[in-house]
Image (cartoon, rainbow, N blue to C red; front, side):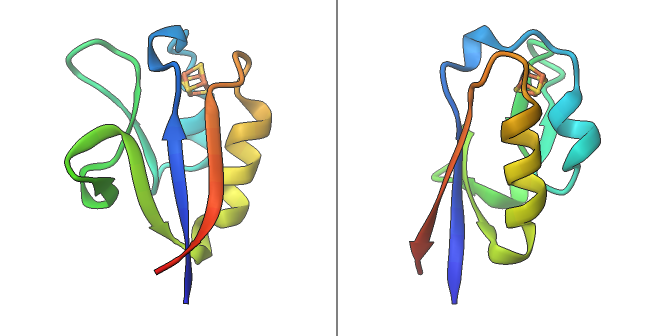
Length: 81
Ligand code: SF4
């Protein structure tokens, strides 16, 4: 089954408006460290807070979050895994 690779880049450009978190809280959360968006721990790729592999079920919400992010730093692609 396909999965979705999602990454936040450049993460430093996040303006912390929480739009992605409100649209797709299963995938995105705000970091308590720097108050920028990060991938929830469960789906992080190799522990990277800015990159994750998520079930295809979340494709719609990831897509909506990417479209809504005001600084356009959320990216995604389908991967075969
Ligand atoms: S929508 Fe974009 S700018 Fe807003 S918190 Fe998420 S990554 Fe940051």
